[in-house]
Image (tube, rainbow, N blue to C red; front, side):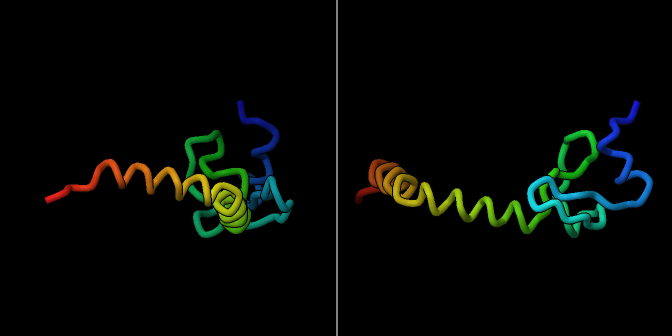
Length: 78
C-alpha cells in the first residue's frame, strides 16, 4: 500500500519540500537520495543546505574547541 503523501510523487513526478513547501521535480537534482519510503529526502537540497549552515553556525565554537582538543592529544611529537 502506498502512503497518500507519495501520490503526488508517483502521479506527477513532483515532490513538495517539507520545509519551504515548494513543489519541485522529484529527482536527485532537487532532493537527496534517502532510504525513506519515497527514496528521496523530505526537504529540498536548498533547505537542507540552509539548515546545515545554520546548525554549523550555532555550534561552530564548541565544535572547533572539540577538534582542537582532539588534535592536541593526537599529534605525533618527534
